[in-house]
Image (cartoon, rainbow, N blue to C red; front, side, top):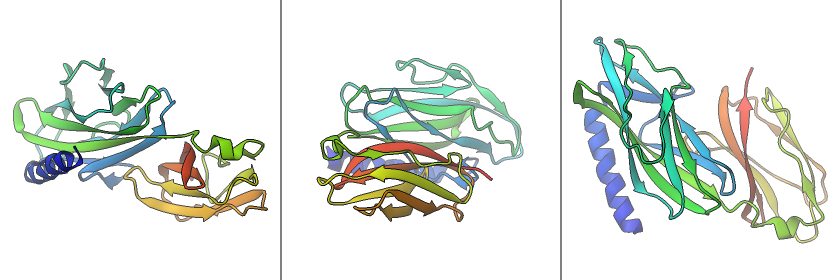
Length: 243
C-alpha cells in the first residue's frame, strides 16, 4: 500500500507541475506547492485545512473544486467547503466562484474537512481547483491528514498536568505550565506550520514547572503544536501568531 501511494503521489506531482501555471495556491501568504499537512486529535470532531486559489492570468475564470480520496483510513470521512459546505458523498462542487484576472479567493472560501471518528491514522485527499470553462486550467494539492494517537501517553501523565500554550493568539513569547510524573522520561513541545515543517521545539525539564518558548521570529498565521511524552503524542493544539 505504501509503495502504491508513493507512485500515485509522484505521478500527481508531475501532472500538477505541468498544469499549475494559470492557477496557484497559497495560505497565510506562502505558496502551497504539492502537500498540505493537517494534524489533529483522532477524537476531535474534525481536522481542517485551508488554501487560497489565485487566478494568475488576466482573464476571469469560473472556479470549481473537485475532491478525490486517494487513501482514507477505514471509518473516517472527508468533505469540503467551497463557499457552501458539501456532504461527504460530493466529489465535485456544484457551485463555482468567479475569480477575475489576478484575483485570489477569500481565505475562508475553501476548507477541507477530515472527520477521523476516533480512528488513528493518516489519510490522503486530493483537491483540484479548475476553470469550469477550460478544465485544463487547474491546480491540485494533496492534503495529508494525520489523526494522532492523542491520549496514548495519558497513563504516564496520571497525576500530572499540563496547560495549553498561552497567550493564544501569541505575539512574542508563549508559556506552558506543567507538572510531570515519575513515569515521564522525556517531554517536548514541537511547533509546526501548516505545511508540516517543524519551526520551533523545546524540552520540558523533568523537575520544572513552566516552559517559555520564543515565537517572535514566526510570521503571523496559524500553527499547530504537539506535546510529546515519552515520544508519544499527548496532545495537539492550534497556535495563532498575531501582531
